Amino acid sequence: MVGSGGVRAAAAALTLGILASLLFPQMRSGFQLLRCRLLGGEVQGHISGLSLAHSGLDFTQLSDTLAFTHEPSPEVQLEAKAALHQALEMKRLGKREKAHRLFLHSLNMDPNYVDALNELGIFLEENRDVIQADHLYSKALTISPCNEKALVNRDRTLPLVDEIDQRQFSVLDSKVKRILAIPKWNAALCRVMEESYYHYIYHTVAIEGNTLTLSEIRHIIETRYAVPGKSLVEQNEVIGVDAAMKYINKSLMSRIGSVNINDILEIHRRVLGYVDPVEAGRFRTNQVFVGHHIPPHPRDVEKHMEELVQWLNSEEATNLHPVEFAALAHYKLVYIHPFVDGNGRTSRLLMNVILMQAGYPPITIRKEQRSEYYSALDLANEGDVKPFIRFIGKCTEMTLDLLIIATTDHSVDKGLPEANPNHSDYTQTILVTN
Image 1 (tube, rainbow, N blue to C red):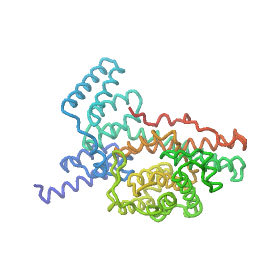
Image 2 (image 1 turned 45 degrees about the vertical axis):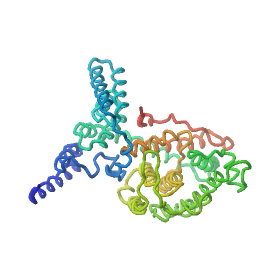
Image 3 (image 1 turned 180 degrees about the horizontal axis):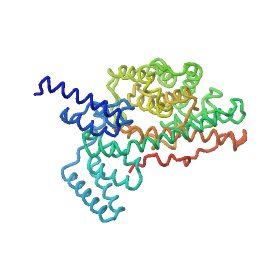
Image 4 (image 1 turned 90 degrees about the vertical axis):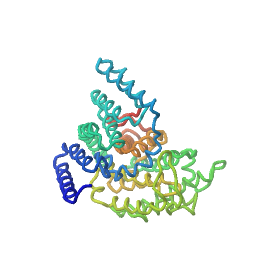
């Protein structure tokens, strides 16, 4: 039992630790270790920079997600440990390819083996893959928040990763300036923005399984006539997204810098209103399951949405780079999953509201990126939101490049050029999962 004097001393130590970690970031791991020891090895707050502090999620909120991770049998754990020892021996002998395969085998046996996560991270750092190493340390801290080795490793990689990401944000900003310099009445720009509108609707519904073609979607929006032989539900999904985008352009772009719960409900009311008018524009009343992710209980949805809106309008959020802000807003909304259906479409629209309010064009997540998109969301649910922010940055750059190319190298009649994912330096920051 700790006396009142001990409690006061612990509180003072924690306060000093917080101040020290803010003034001297390199001391963060030392402060976290002190905190762990004072609290008996338990952590109830943020530890690892952007992946938690900026995402607004703590480890307790991730417990439902992690509950789906099955504990490997003792035999499997022994095999994982043996593979790790062999990997370290191969690394010592200079047989790095074999060591890499053994590290991966160890984690295939036991994905939550913290020692293997740390050692593979160090191995990848030696190979100059600091992005992947940082992700592994972040995962190790999600599993074991007080792991000393992971804390020290993460403190080493986090500043390097942040520097890489900030450089990429600067690249995006420079491309936005090029686009803003183009006169709004430029014929090529007007044409490509119109084409982008239809492309956005096509991809945002196709990601979720809609089978309508781009030409069919254009026909539905322009004529309001149904396409014979195609699902009416799918066609109404298209009309809903179109209505939501028109609402955003008419009502939200004039109110720069403020988003409230009613705005999100009104967007959703249009997204889902032509498919399910009963559930459109209202929070769900049933528990839903999204893969391995269990969103908050229905009774907690409104509270989470109030916290989200408070964050959206906070100085913390608005001081972020627009792409980071938009990506986190998208992730937070889809994490809460406040609606029975239409959460993804609504989250992508909210993301674009934030980007457009910051002077960026709306971006498109293409249906061909579906797997990468969902993988990045899964990694965010596991505690590291950085890969998702980088993915949104990649999509942003693809959109910017399309606009730049279409207004410089293409005539008005050639339409929208094909997207090219191989651009800039984003390959340096896109996570490669094993």
